[in-house]
Length: 149
Image 1 (cartoon, rainbow, N blue to C red):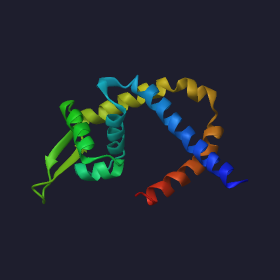
Image 2 (spheres, one colour):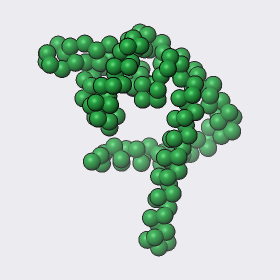
Image 3 (tube, rainbow, N blue to C red):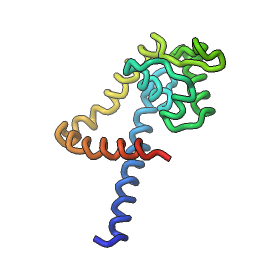
Image 4 (tube, rainbow, N blue to C red):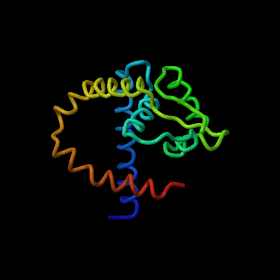
C-alpha cells in the first residue's frame, strides 16, 4: 500500500467516525426530554457513573471544551435543577459540581428515550457485529486520550 493510500484510509476512517457521530447526535438530540442538548446529556451521563463532584475547570478539561462553554452548559443544567454547584470546602474561590436527584432522574428518562430512538439500529446490527468493533475503537480512544495536545 502506498503512503497516499494509507493517508486516504486513515482519512476515510476518521471521516466515517465524524459522520457517525454527527448522525447519532442528531438522532439522539431529537428525542432528549427536558430540552436537553447532547452536551448537557453527556455531562449528566458523566456523573451518572457515580463520580465525585468536580470543578468546572476539571469538567472542561475532561470534555475538552473551553471553561466558558462548560460554564454555559452548567448554567443551563443548574436552571433545570439537574446539577448542584456549591463552593469548594477548602478553596473558597472554586466551585464543585455534582448531579442532583432530579438530574439523575432526567438522565434515566433520557436514556430510555435514546434506547427507543435506537431500537431500529439494535434490530439491524447484531451484538456480535458491534462487539467486534469495540476493541479497536477502545484502543483508538485510549491512544487519543493519552496523546491529547
